[in-house]
Image (tube, rainbow, N blue to C red; front, side, top):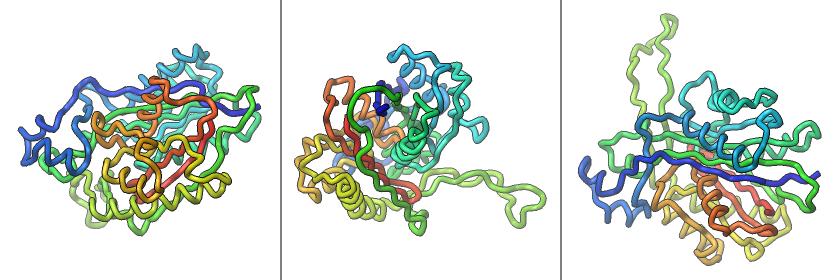
Length: 326
């Protein structure tokens, strides 16, 4: 039995906020944002939250594949912005689609979440007990953005994307190489506050309105990504006994167009092999890779036999690369 990605899907909120819209709210401009990030628009929720986005993707995957939800063995949701701590986003999906035989959980590795999720999936499917699984990356970062801070608010958008994986009798292998890395000593370079402990037993914690906004040291993150992502990709390629010339597409986390450009140059590969959709969506963290993956699939740009590198990087700081054969 061989593992394959059989369906892809994504969902983005209908509300689109352009750079010009942001220029009405803060000291910025379309030219300032585009020249530094490559971003033109971002989708943001109005009356939805992370669970709504995830459920939409899961339902689309099942509809496309005409899959009985009771045959799904597991559901994993990669997110740093779940609607609630409990129940998890994955549990909400299970309820919404009727996947009563699945086990479910959320995974938080920030912008690398979908890649870490693929690593978990790779391990789970070594068991003969599991035949079908769903992996979704989803974020609603608009609720954590300080919309008065042009250094961070202009970067982020909301969305979700996912894949349905199934074992079948076709020849070949899906996973060829993997490299996962975390640098917790640099964790303060991207932060997003959780809940402050205000219990009567907590010493000194009395603020029940903590600063919950995203904070980021942009220069440090840029250096981290451009220095470490090419190394991660090369380590995974070496594990797979491949070279960069063997790769058909490099699907990277959509954090910043300039970062993607630098990585392409360091790998000495043409930028045409690095598709981007950051102009439309901005940085959707764990959702960015599966959203782009689905758009490429829908456009017929992902073909059987292609070798594809998927690489995510961001909060934690975390970094991950998976090499797959379609």
